[in-house]
Structures are given as C-alpha cells and as structure tokens.
Image (cartoon, rainbow, N blue to C red; front, side):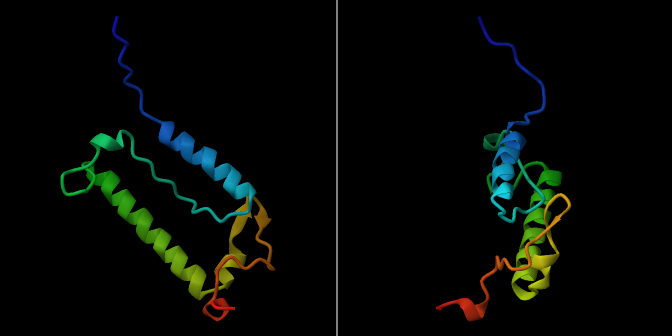
Length: 107
C-alpha cells in the first residue's frame, strides 16, 4: 500500500534553524536575525546554480548582502556591537568584544 502524498508546505528547515538558533543565542553568540531555508533544495536549483524561483533567489541575494553589510559594520564601527540587543530587551555587555580588531591580531 502506498503512502498518502502530503501537499502541506515543508517547514522542517525552519524548525531546524530555530532549534539551532535558540541555544546559540543563550550561549550569547551573535546570530544574524534573518533566516533562509529552501524547501526541497535538491529540486530547487537550475543547472547554472541559481534558484529556480526568482523571488527566493532575490531573497537569498538580499540576505547575503545584508549579512555582509552587518559584518563590515561590526568590524569598522565598534559601537554597532554595543548597540545590538542580544536577547529581547537585554542590552549587550559593554565589556564583551566579539570582533577581533586589527591591533589584536598577533598578540
């Protein structure tokens, strides 16, 4: 007897992202706020490596660009680290330096 085909949206990827995100945040790791998952990824790509769905492709490109902007801002502007909110309503510890500065390399 064959199994019934479920036509529900696949949400397992998002569940996995949340399952990983929660303990990392409790360990005070800085986790990028936007998450991206791609349902049925084994079927989602064109031969050239792009995502078949143009909206999902654009979302991925935007997420990566925004992440890189945040990384650059964190490296160049230390105040970005202290202005971020680690947990809901909790300000980051001002004495914690999460970005290695050029001066600290090689010490």
